[in-house]
Image 1 (tube, rainbow over the protein chains, first blue to last red):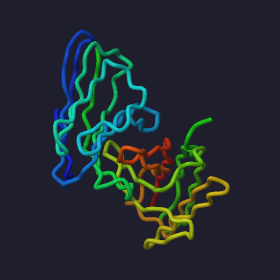
Image 2: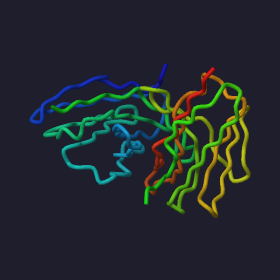
Image 3: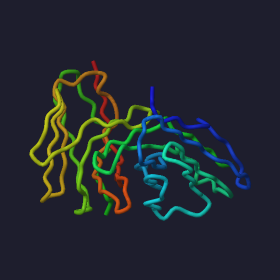
Image 4: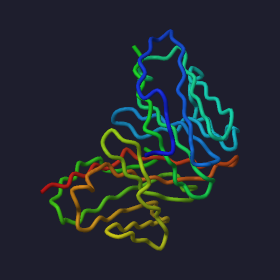
Length: 113
Length: 113
């Protein structure tokens, strides 16, 4: 059972909708991440937060808006998405900068109609 | 040029076989290196770290050649349960904290009876 929980597991939304993905980690980690996984493509890093501060934005379009209220919670707010944004969105956490071991949630599968 | 290049496979091998995967990476600033494993429709999980001197974990051996920017994974005595996608992951530490892991597309392994 993963220490990183993501909700919802599945989400279908229209291009004009506004929705949010939620991630919670129960591991006491300091860093949290959003990754996007599309079919036939490698995992793409989107955002990194360390102690609630954003330390990386990998040129992500502004229609994706992250929020990290504390070290245990991470949100990804979605608005006016495009069909090509349909993908699996994976949240992860890590203890510190040195280990490189990320613990992933099971992902939120997003379909944009 | 892709940041991480891996042969996508699939590699179909019989149980008990030895199989090797290779990977090259382009970012010479990468500081840490890992192999992750991803089962079908599951989240990635850390398999092992990769050290310059080479390291072994049971049936798994990883090698790193920094000069050639090349990483390898050897699996001996393959088991059916080894069937998965193996992801090559170089990583850098972000200035503000957290890790920037760059994932390859992965190499798919199918172990057969």
